[in-house]
Image (cartoon, rainbow, N blue to C red; front, side):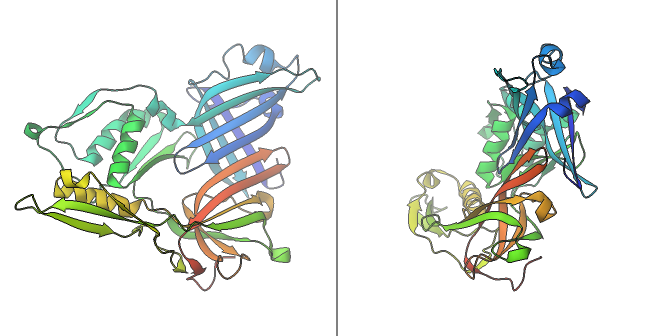
Length: 374
């Protein structure tokens, strides 16, 4: 594809196998969006009237939705990176009057799509949340899904005589509901090997190892095409929880909780002050341990006030920018230089071109680190 960058495409029903040459040559563009919630992809093929992909393979079900698995591997400097492993959800064909300009487009999601196809009614008596998540993920080991489940800090368990939970939704929807309740996140990340994915249920914590710095306005050292910053003064808030005293259950006790993320500390010397105060209206009806779980969840899901958006050329950057890790920024000025959390990355691949659009975030102006990794 480019000097030092190679693309591997695997497609097949159930089990993905290397795509034949006719399919590889027909690829016009690939887009992979790796966000906080899930990973999606879109591949466009350019075909002619006599193309075997259009006349033979497509009618035979080669690109059928739901059953067809797609794996995309990018090899950069001899190191393979699995950027997508999922299933096709949509197929589109756009005929053209110009010879050789008809297109076939496929759109899909990561393997967590398989967890969102069947609604289940499943009683779960006397089970902690970590057991519920592992039970829901167990059937997907056949798809190469390896679970990483972190037990919640506060995990109330009801005895069956007091009632129990019943799952009445798809596995993915139920796991995400448990994650929101605990202040955790749930996502499925492709790799590290083709055909393997990691299902993570735990706090929203980024890998503390910084990636190579994104440099802007630095002449020959510049490695990004564009980069802009914004500060949202309304992003931070204080939430007040109310619990009833444990003795009489009649005296309300307000508990203000600051907008501080326990797993994503501010990366600037001047944290953004909270501008809003809101009240939780359900906490007074809950037990103290349930309110404690909600408070911990709020502390783990706070938003960052500073965000950055930009575009880079992979061949100039020299590496792939990965989500859920730290990255340094330099050349943005005293207020915005320093470390950031990488929230999302979009891979845009064409013949002879590989670019990434990215979104960064942090809280606090003026960096609290003296240098960043060049």
